[in-house]
Image (spheres, rainbow, N blue to C red):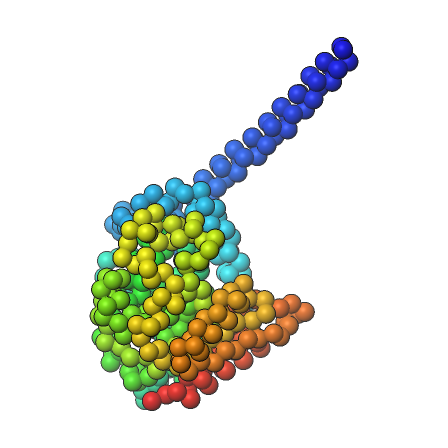
Length: 367
């Protein structure tokens, strides 16, 4: 009996040690996450374009609609993940050499409120002597990450092929919800429509493009441009713009699917069910409000949004939209081409080919 009691005490001691170690690990992780997600001043060299991680004495980054989201543990984890993705993207960009002989106009406010996310860049060939077709790009980043700088090299690659390229930023979750992000995108399109004449733009030919989450925004904006009813529901501006083509790279336009309950609350707000937009959180719920322009989709065998892109293609085809799918199964260094490969590495052999193929589609549909 003494031996059994001794063994029990030993077992309890070991259990207590294990639980103590687990508690220390959990506490350390909580502290680390808390430190990594502390907001920094937007003028700091340490500032990173991840939602909720910027602060300012003059700019109010946070909207009332996203109240409480910044405290959500899942948001905290995603913020840390995207901070590491940002470092990885910086490393990828550092290995690339963008083209020269391009005019570059940086940090033009489309809303003059001092918010760094309410700005756009413009690129086009130097010494342009004639009007050129327009491309408007909306970057991706999982709704929580990135700004126009993320796609700078991609947009330079587009401009280098003879286009005027507008690259826009928009506010990020958890500072705002998807509703405000769409409002930002439409405000940017509104500014572009009113200011294109100041640049060598062929305003009759405009292609809207976006990758990943940006693909969602681009597809939604393409419908909002045509539907007054939806503009009133989403409370966005009426924009005088007709699209010649739509380019969607690995789009993820459906956000009201099974298993996405937590993500819906994070992106659309905790009160998303009470909003007028609740019935329109999937692309198939809004597509009938417009006749979309010819649409080109890019995906790859290593694309995390491969099934989403295929589903979007099938939906567009079923609605009679002129649609082409470029599904790249090539291997690069014996690895499958990853998510938005043509955007991240536009000067790579595979990225360059994907861009050329997409722009051929646009040129074939020019008015």
